[in-house]
Image (cartoon, rainbow, N blue to C red; front, top):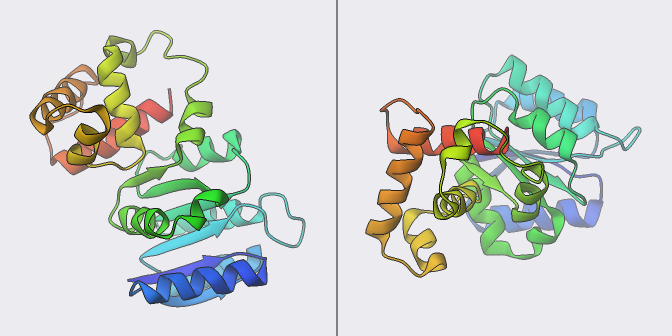
Length: 214
C-alpha cells in the first residue's frame, strides 16, 4: 500500500515514515510543504495521503488545500488529515464531496500506533476514520429537521461509533450488546436515512457522511 505523507516537522515526519514502513506501507513520497504535496499526489497517485493541515509557506491550510485539489483531479483519492486542533471548516470542506475515503485525526492519536495504522488502512480501503472530538464538534449544532432526527438515541450512538470507523463487533463490545443487536441498529439507520440497498460497506460510509454533514 503506497502512501504520500506531508508533515513539516522533520522528527514527526521521520517517525511516521518509520512507523508506516514497519507496518508494511510503502512511502511513495514524504514532503514538508503544500506545493510539493500536490505534485507528489498527482505524480504518484497513492493508495492514501496522510496530510498535515498547516504546511509551509504560510502555515494556514496549505496541506488541506493541496489534498482537496488532488481529490478534484483524482476523484475519491483517500485522504487522512492530521491536525493539532479541530478545524471545523476544514473538516466540513473535506466531507463536502460525499465520496468517503476520508479521515480526520488529532495529532495526539498518532501516539497510539495501532489506532493510527488502523485509521490509515480504513481510509485507504474507502472508509472513514474520524476522531471522536472532531465528530463532537461537527454535530454540536444538533440534527435540526433532517432524516437524522428519526434516529433513536441508541441508533445515533451506533452511528457515531461507525463514524470513528469501528466494526459491528467493536461497536457491540463498546456498547456491551450483542453483535446481532448492532446489526439490527445499522439496518434501521440505513432505512431511516433512505439509503439505497447497495453493499453494506458503502451504506456505512454514506450514513457516516450524512451524520457528519448535518
